[in-house]
Length: 220
Image (cartoon, rainbow, N blue to C red; front, side, top):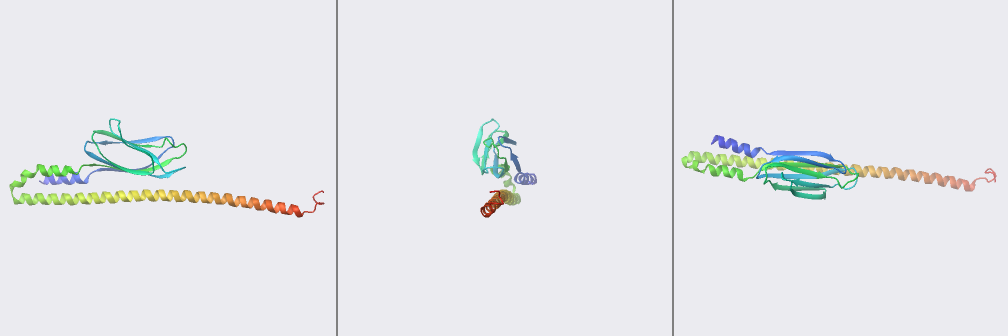
């Protein structure tokens, strides 16, 4: 029972999770690969947080080891997908920026690979015969079940809180980039406007002075 308890805790706690922020050059497509086993669940969320020109959008594809496209998004700023793997092998996550000619995109994505929730239930069903050994074993088994359920809830809450914080950071980075880009545009437009106003003012002064200038001094 101690071995079952330890293996249950380890199977509940450990899951693969990866987040990354990277840049996709204009006219390019970047792909990432991750090995996934059958019946494992793929959770992926992505968001475009910056672009050198134009809209904050990217195309996305999720492909299985056989080369089939499972999910395809075209020019979206953000999205999330959940898929249960049916094939064993390397799954492909591609971010496509080939539709852009000049705009470089900065993308944040978070992927979680976890097993199905039914795994723990199968372990308990396999151990039902041991409950006949006595009340002590039954009580111990119930405590193991309660502890594993508590750990599972804590794991889910911590994972959800972490992903929310990462998404909040991505939103904050995108909003900051938009604000900085807008500020740069306002400053550039203001400088051009001030230069134009000064040029117009100088031209007007010279023109008005020429109207009242002594024609004799000017050679007439």
